[in-house]
Length: 354
Length: 180
Image (cartoon, rainbow over all chains, first blue to last red; front, side, top):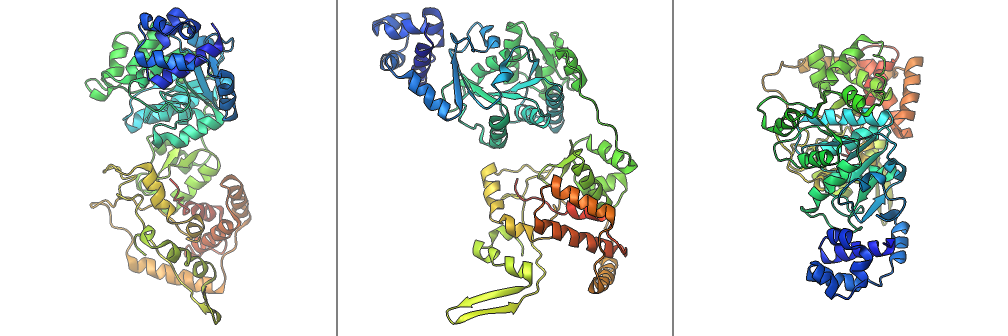
């Protein structure tokens, strides 16, 4: 199979809106392109795809690659040697993988990697745990993979960026499409210091049916998949299923019994998923040394303040009331801790640890 | 000025000179005059168009772009000229009452009198903290001067002769960023 033909088939698929992956895997990309149109028709290709394949047969794949390269987007196809080894383990590996961002080295299968996924509408506690897990993995040399969705996904990417490690966002649209828009700040930072990948050509708009498919890439790019918070029938459970298909470990964060928001994760635990309560557990599964916990500050008030913030972000007035310390000293302590890198403002008037 | 972002942009930007230098500059075809305009500008705004962003009890319904556009109506240079910027969360109807205003007024009057004579200078640890902050928080030269002034005012309110590191740290905390 030729890499150029694979790319042409991918582009024909994008142009026609029909996924050519199954046919290309069975018959080969070149066979699809080089035969007369009746052949793909007999193979079962939809008319739109047949037309698009005919138009794509002589398109200039090299020029297309150069155009993408000029925009900082790389492209590997399944017959390229540099195609990510982890994706080859899928029974339906994507024909092509497009990537934006500097961290292509993060696709190296030697790097220990965790997918951190979960609900788009997670509670504050779940978001904070996702962030802490990701930060611990990133700061101890591991890779964090997720899907740039709202909620747990975004928190995982944020945590990895804060931990100074690589993070890969797998999109269900083109890598140049910052979707969902509310995550465009984290999208931009991943494009600057991580890696954004997709099996769909740049410019592909988001569509609901593409998101379950991208979940298989999230599972494939990671050694373990952690589901932080998920209802029954959550998309995160699809990622967990893919991980099981690949023979990778599935881990879940427990929730209260009978709570709908935790029905998905508790179900995974019931069927044997590994239990994750904190960063040490996840680092243990990955065989990474958990990051050192920074020494508690010398000052007694600072220690109490950090302890209060470990419960969740808080407004200085609330901290002042909870600790019985004046508002002035509280904000002064917060600023000192900010300069020391221990706390940060959340942009909504509250402060959070880390 | 209530609902600050609702004022027209040109009017808001015209505030910069009186806030910075205490005067206004009026230019007409026949010439330009400078007039004194010492002012104390107090302004309030919502966190977002619907008013509920960051409220633990109500969900904000604004798209991120709308929040950003709303906040961008108050420019960075204008924001910089407000020495004290604080988030005011939902008040608790059953909360303990604060300090009586008369007590605060007396303290402010005393500090004001003190500041007429001189502003408490920073002590050495305070200077070091301010230098650290300029570096770590990327403060502009104007912000640095403002923080130093506010730290002096905090020290004066506490009737101290020098502004300590804690006063600088507190002054730094009153610099809420408006960009979401």
